[in-house]
Image (tube, rainbow, N blue to C red):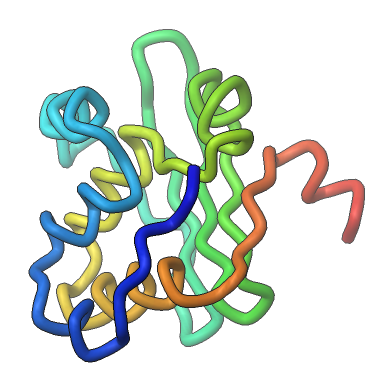
Length: 129
């Protein structure tokens, strides 16, 4: 996916949902709304990033936002099949960005749009550590 070209000032005028639309698609954003808050567990959060556990219908997924290394790490099928290749967020990331404090979420989404981030699956990420 080619990232839309916006200035930082233009992006700062957008709300979370407008920013997510630039990094995802309508279908995924609609699916994100179906994920229940009770199925999301914060494993850790710090200045360097976040890690979540998300209980899915098929399995439990792990999702990490690594701000320090500018990496998004996850293990769902959509992420591995399409998200990483297309640099698009899956429904799990869409949901998490709606749960993080708005100021933080906005800063991360703007950074994603302006800078180079890597999109990794959990297994490959663990091999590099």
